Length: 463
Image: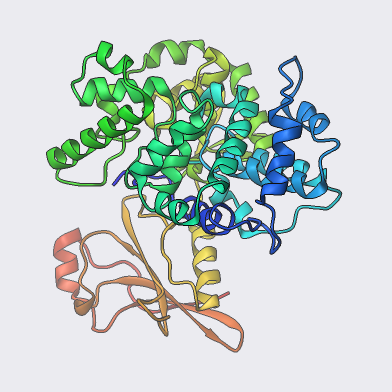
């Protein structure tokens, strides 16, 4: 399935897209409030004041947009903010913090503050794939495309509209009616958001063509002649062949094993271009815009002036500053012996082991205290060679939640699962490090490790 994106958590973003589809696209409701915003009246106001009056001169996009919408009704300005939210669901080249800043500013032009919403979290706004410089430079064109698209959708008979949102390929064909459909990146983003099992998260035209040439075996001349719909169908056919070849649907063109077959980078050239000033500029950008959820480090931090930063994110941003090109974090490795870390250290920056246990246990205790959230996604899978396992129950909340650090395959029935369980007593979280069900088989543990278990027994921790 093309919804698989490696380490990127797509569910919050796809849930947001489904909310928009059901509330705003097929209805006229607001994404953030209970009122109606995606109406013909307010869409027509944006079309009149923005689409039909483009400002192609020099200047900052938001500054020009505010002037264009100066006479637009307040509700239509709120709609413009929600359109920007929709545009920002996919791009990971803009941080969640920056996205929220833009959405808040545009909404504020209505004279009201942006309300709190679960659709404005970092998880929702973290992004799925890079839009690249072209998307950032052409936001006004992407905004116009969305307005034209929804206006055209509003004019459809209701039965046809319902059929379109349920049929990926009929929807794909219908989008050909929207002005500028062949050039806009949001066209590709929209298809992925609505039909993530049928369309790829490949938003740049160059990448779409390169993937088809490498994996589909199609000549470059023939690919160049294809329109976007034909490329979509060829990409779908190529994915099916790859899923058969690899025996899994968990494939993505931007993560191994596929990325290594088509994304070639000259790491040495990029690394040699990075200076300490580029790294400091990257740190300033992270201080300003924050760290995307998918870019959080798991094992190490770059430490500067008492603050901690994800080293791979720092290297990626510094590389972009040095070369002027996006440098995808999936294209290089991190770790104590990695080239990226060695470059940062050579430039005088400290790479330190991340203290994960304290926040990990704190997160576990907080979730266990709630007693309703059973999800375990987002927890580490491994910590310094130990497998990490977490449970809050299956189907229903367990009486005792637990987190385990396992040095090898362990069998709970034999009593050798070291766990950190938590339960609530008198509004106070209690935890025990114990061995479950039966006494541990000391002889077997001794044979495995060559020594007796260290500090075996019961430890009680009060928090």
